[in-house]
Length: 105
Image (cartoon, rainbow, N blue to C red; front, side):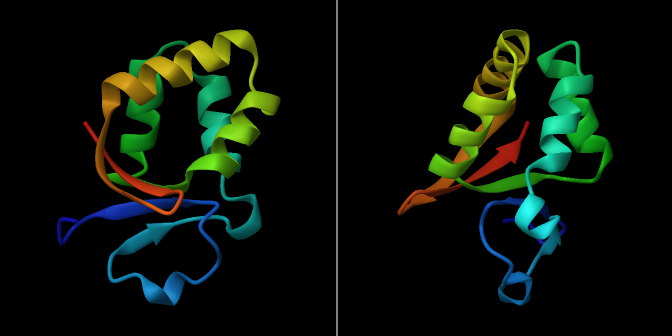
């Protein structure tokens, strides 16, 4: 990751001291910000802008846990926004053992 990266940790555990980049997380409720941003967005571009405006450059997530939460918490329209955002505005950088890092485009 770039030196100036700010990584949004989503369901990755509370071991912030392990990271050598700036992090953004709410601990056990780490997806709450993302869920609010999705619900407030009318498009995938607007979602990308909300995340970017927080200074976030990368997402580090527990794939299975996040996608379970998104399946149960999002409306049909919100899922569409997330899917477009995921496919158009996230570039995969690393994936291992159910955890992935993406860079915001």
